[in-house]
Amino acid sequence: MKQNTENLLAKKPILISGPCSAETEEQVMQTAIRLKATGKVDVLRAGIWKPRTKPGLFEGIGVEGLKWLRNAKKETGLPVTVEVATARHVEEAIYHDVDILWIGARTTVNPFSVQEVANALRGTDIPVLIKNPVHPDLELWSGAIERMQKAGITNIGLIHRGFSSYGNIDYRNAPMWHLPIEMKRRYPGMIMICDPSHICGNRTSLQEISQKSIDLDFGGLMIETHIDPDNAWSDAKQQITPERLNEMVMELIWRSDDSTEQEFINALLHLREQINQVDDELLTLIGQRMKLADLIGTYKRDNNITILQTNRWNEILQRAFNKGEQLGLSKEFIVRYFDAVHLESISHQNKIMNDQ
Ligand code: PEP
Ligand code: MN
Image (cartoon, rainbow, N blue to C red; front, side, top):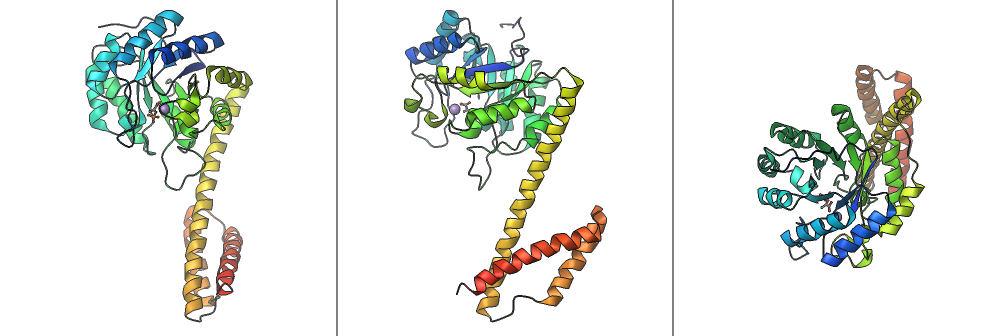
């Protein structure tokens, strides 16, 4: 089997780009030529087999697209990468000289599929990029890395493409930055690439998410590009033209990570990101608490009971003092915090009482 001599994942930052799906020979070739012309792209990507949520959508062009990719590589010199999910995909991709394979988010969630891919890879040492699983489970992500390592794959990189989360409206897939940060901590030598296209699901926040990943010392970007984004056969809303990619990349501020000052900045950024995440979770929980208060308010209103019931409040405070003590939180803080929560709760319930 083919052995890679050059370490294709060693470049930092690495920029991978190309269409969500290979659609036609012309589209693949034109995208490749226009990406090459930017002088910024290191690897050409294209989906050949597409895992679609619903049947009846474009499920990828299949093996024929691998020939188009091989031609595009010959024309531009760009190494190519495709998503693989089965042993047959692996065999076909390697047979058609694909340089790097990637495992998609819907595959990482399934240990059977990951193992099938790993078995098919045994004996090769092709670089493999592993996307995070669809849902926020770091053990599955780590498990996929271990399966590849056990199959003898040494050149592994990670791709952060965000996580599916209920109620999330800002992104197609919530970034949950603290999770890729934890993976960077667990696997310090492994490149972490950000895929802003699948995080955003639109074009408007690509720049912001890309910059954020660079600020968090990610090793590169995978961004979907298309010669006619609006008419793409998959993920039309999030793709941009190669020329737009060029502009975007020029506006990004790349930081070097070779100074101790940069190390300190990175450490600070990582901790702040984790604090942001915890604060978001706290606010979400407080929001849920207020919804419960609203429900209680409705019952009290319908049964003509007063809002404030002193006994209940003392009970809440006593519970919190005990819990707070175990967690190293001062009594003063607990009182101030619960006063604020209580006031907000009463104001919610007042609103309900007067809403009848
Ligand atoms: C893709 O990169 O086109 C893709 C299908 O991504 P993901 O596995 O992140 O959904
Ligand atoms: Mn896509």
